Amino acid sequence: MAVSRNSRIYCGVFGCKTFYSTNENISFHLFPKENESKVLRINKMGKEELVDRHCAWAMNLKMGKESLKKTQLRVCSLHFTENDFMPSGINTRRKRLKPTAIPSKNLPMSTVPLLFQKRRRSPKKRDLPKKSSNENNSCEVSTSVEIPEKHFESTCSQDTSDIDEDDSHETIRELYEKIDVSTQVTSGDLMVPFISLINSPKHLNTMTGIPSFNLLNKIEELYRLEFPDKRFHNISYKERIVMVFMKFKQDLSFIVLSILFKNVSPESCRTIYASIIPSLAMLLNSVIYWPSKQEISSNIPYCFEKFNKTRVVIDCTEISLQKPKCLTCRIKTYSNYKSTFTLKFLIGISPGGLITYISKPYGGRASDKTIFEQSGLIGMMERFDGIMVDKGFLIDDLCLEKQIDLIRPPFLKNKIQFSKAEALLNKDIASARVHIERINQRIKSFKIFQSKFSWSHNYLAYDIMIIICGMCNLSSPIFASDKFNVPI
Image (cartoon, rainbow, N blue to C red; front, side, top):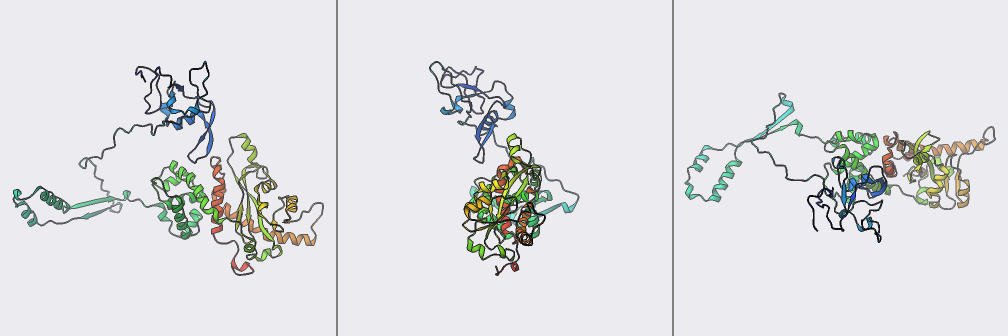
């Protein structure tokens, strides 16, 4: 292919040396303008997201702000597949890209050429560390070996003609190793990992919500086994897990986390946070399971003696959400009950106090009945099972159809007051249902659900709820051992 080096039309991709030529097989296409159109792009998590076409081109071609400032920036056809072009007609000779085309071939590995490696400074030119006036701020370690003068005399007095070259090198090396060596270490060179400061179960539970070091070590062991590292990380498995749980428990910003974990930047903390959550959710999802009838009946506490057919106690919990940018999302997530934007989860617990069901997140606008219908929870129950709910669940017709016993506090309706039987029933149901409120309180003890949840992380909300509910199941039980009919 004849290439014209004097042409002003060339490919703007780093490393591509294609210039304009008379060859019809290569065409040049202008860089799309900002906010011109949106395309689907697969992100680092493997999920499709709708982004600006201008940004998608810049990210795939690894172009920085300086490169994008150029006018009439062009990309050659060598960076596109055949499917990216519109079918050519009879009279059309010029190739045209589809409106959704994104560069996917011959992509650059970097935008900065690595011309040479950084050379290490000569030892003579290195600056020695300054000695501090305070002796406590620096410590000096010195190792010295005295070499007898006789050894030097005997060595130097030998005839050089009788010593081979290899022997002389070996002798010099031995003498060099015996020369006085002193090493100076300043206090700034000693970095204490933040995780070493968490030295008691109380501190661990306060900072992360993990009740014991044994549980933390087990989570680290399973994570290391199931999700081994494919690249180098500045911090260990345990530090990454502790970082994520500290974000859950204390809702610290990524800048604060980067200060506590000194080897990582805020952006690295954000990346670790987004990448490790799905893996932890897969590990802790097995802790939240649907127990059998026999297991539930053998662990019935005293407060459920009058409702021994109860299979699950359900309630909806809401977490505050940042105001979405999309108008449709605002409508779906606005809660009239909370008077703000929320995400809504359906939580189910067994009579024994274990979390057995978590629904997908719904917008705050969804009613309790709608969430129950779409969750599919009723399909997991058997005939004549009991389900305990509050007055917000108007699911009488669904339970009647599936022959499920609905346990719900009575409505006052047009009555002035409850009858004696209704008042006693209301008291018994309240004493049994109060424990799901205790579970919700444990979930909300993680401050990430107390403050407004980030809208940019809404896709992680379900996985975070799985992890936190899993930790609630692995923590101390809701009921003491003397609250059951039989010892557990």
